Image (cartoon, rainbow, N blue to C red):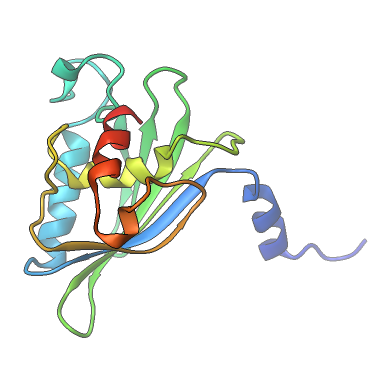
Length: 172
């Protein structure tokens, strides 16, 4: 029997999973502030009952259904459960300050079930944690999304035009 290359095995295992990875560059706030803000957003959005502050938006809201898997100094791991089909997506974030003093969030969301088209859900899993509800405003005034490696994402999202992202992520 030959050796199995772990990297090849992992790559082939995740090849049929919709995913999205991108960097979020935020100016004027510390990595600690961004991290605590995102963790608080997750805590306010657990399940779809009384524990989610967005329950008033209806049971189908994608703003609820988040949970904390683990928080470490280097990596935050969250999950998001979709309200209708109850699919689970894994979200990881690494938050740090780069050489120019900007806060960088390296974010990734991967669908656990096999999926080829995700209606931009993995993009929105991350994007919605940067927003307060269905308003068209991000939590941070000076923000940029960069380096998108997403199976699917709203048009304009990586060029600073978030209108399509707001509309799409209100649904998914």
